Amino acid sequence: MTDVRQANGTDSVVTKLFRSEQGGHEQVVLCQDRASGLKAVIALHSTALGPALGGTRFHAYASDDEAVEDALNLARGMSYKNALAGLDHGGGKAVIIGDPAVDKSEELLLAYGRFIASLGGRYVTACDVGTYVADMDVVARTNPHTTGRSPENGGAGDSSVLTAYGVFQGMRASAQRVWGEPTLRGRRVGVAGIGKVGKHLVEHLVEDGAEVVITDVRPAAVDAVRAKHPQVAAVADTGTLVREQLDVFAPCALGGVLDDDTVAALSAKVVCGAANNQLAHPGVEKDLADRGILYAPDYVVNSGGVIQVADELNGFDFERARAKASKIFDTTLAIFTRAAADGVPPAVAADRLAEQRMAERTPADRWMPPTA
Ligand SMILES: NC(=O)c1ccc[n+]([C@@H]2O[C@H](COP(=O)([O-])OP(=O)(O)OC[C@H]3O[C@@H](n4cnc5c(N)ncnc54)[C@H](O)[C@@H]3O)[C@@H](O)[C@H]2O)c1
Image 1: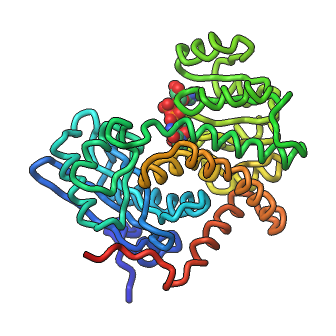
Image 2: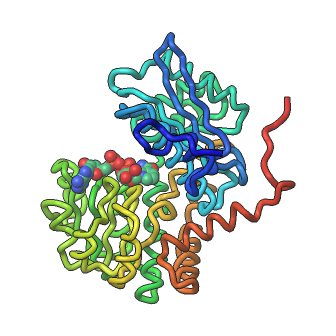
């Protein structure tokens, strides 16, 4: 059979889906509701471990193809993240195409929820960029497969507390690996981005006895942390922070921060932070390893949030969710051990461990949607 290619010669989404190594998704659903203007893509990468769980991104994509591609990539990432978080969930993700500030409406979110309902539990949604707890409260009105809702509506609310806690566990595991002790006491830690997650991470670090340096593009956020912890130092920007004498660098703002320049400038021996997709391009994980910098894979250490939303599906219990997030310490250490054994960077070892967990499910163990 010949390849299906678009007129411009690039692979079509269908080709990528069915033939590429990065494909292999189980199901992709294109949704449209003309009355509300909803255009959405729901991508289910894997349900090997259970119902696919992942948030809904609301974004004004440059093209519809770009939206499908983003949904495919994000869904795949969720399979790996959920597998290593020890959840009985596969990976999925949805994107709603449009500008959330202009196009988001109650009618649109309710229509979106009806499409999720039509999947009979194969996909469970939550918040992502451009969607919030209040939106999940609306989506939940038309389907029960929604998490990340407000406490008033039976949800767990803001997930940043457990995300920060999980990052801290990953950082303790990194300290164990590099310095032989699971503590940041006496270490100099630079936190780039002190938003919802970063500010909680600073609390853990201060409590543990670390020396903390922060930066954020919002001066008010810096002032708020320094008002509470005057011993915390601040620098002008992330470029300055990475050039500081640090033991640990914790990216907690946007993705792509670990590029060639940053890696070359870093004095830190550990990189461990909350930001998604920290590696700017393939190969950076090897550059970090070659420079003797231990990289704790982002999707492993920032999985406290998805652990929280998964717990909410069983009636949220903070202590139960926190106990599960504590295991990020063991998982991160297991990744470093596997990386050393296989002679690969931790990012590669993490992927291998996730693939192993997914492959261990035999067809007989596999999750099936409940029959009516
Ligand atoms: N909130 C969660 O539960 C969660 C879960 C998993 C991953 N993450 C990821 O962690 C990161 C932080 O999430 P958050 O919820 O704290 O977001 P947030 O928007 O509350 O905080 C981000 C902070 O970074 C700052 N910032 C933006 N650009 C910056 C720059 N160039 N230099 C320095 N600071 C900059 C912002 O001013 C803000 O204070 C994101 O990448 C997010 O995708 C968050």
